[in-house]
Amino acid sequence: MGFTNFIQQADAVALFILATLLIMSVGSWYYIAIKGWRYSQTSKLSREFLHTFWAAPNLEAVAQRIRSTGISDPFSHLVHHGFTAIEQHRSRNGNSLIEAGSAEDFLTRSLKRAIDQDKARLEGGLTFLATVASSAPFVGLFGTVWGIYHALMVIGMSGQSGLDKVAGPIGEALIMTGLGLAVAIPSAVAYNVFVRLNRNTMVQLNSFAHDVFAFLSTGLVCNSMPAEVKRVTPFKKTNEAS
Image (tube, rainbow, N blue to C red):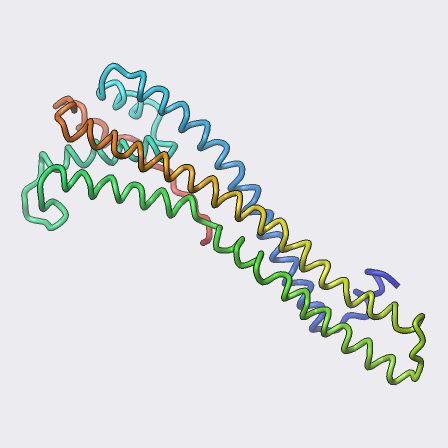
């Protein structure tokens, strides 16, 4: 009796369910580890950039900082989009819809695009975690039902229905439910944690966007600053599955 005996006696359907749960578990822990590490790094870089931004004497110093260190967090990404929007609007030829409207409208659209890009990046992988958290218990339950069905068939064919004959096969079948819960619980906890962290980040980013818009739209940008900002290394996007 036990898990080893259960594996030896499992049919193709049971093995397929076990493989599915294994894939779910590996994928969940991959996203938990990757997103946890990336959030830790991004949070650190964001704090450093915000400290530099608010301590800078002017926006030219901020541009110099972005040119030297690159774009590595949502806040520097947002500022880079703002600088680029100002320069692009100044050099516009008026022949495209994306350049239509006033400078404030153009800047607003650019900042919104930056926020949407960061939001999509932060939410990468959350769909997978939510799917695993909601479906893994039912996958395990299906495996349990299937195992109990086969256990009862074997017991019925043997004609022995004593407790010692029933408890073993039924107990082995219940292993599937336990595995489903073991896969689902970490995914559910991680999903809730990451959603909370992302929500906090987006609140801070939206608040910061209002400040950036105010600085750039009130003429605080130096005329010579944005041209070189456009050559900053692009923000590195992650290839997380959604």
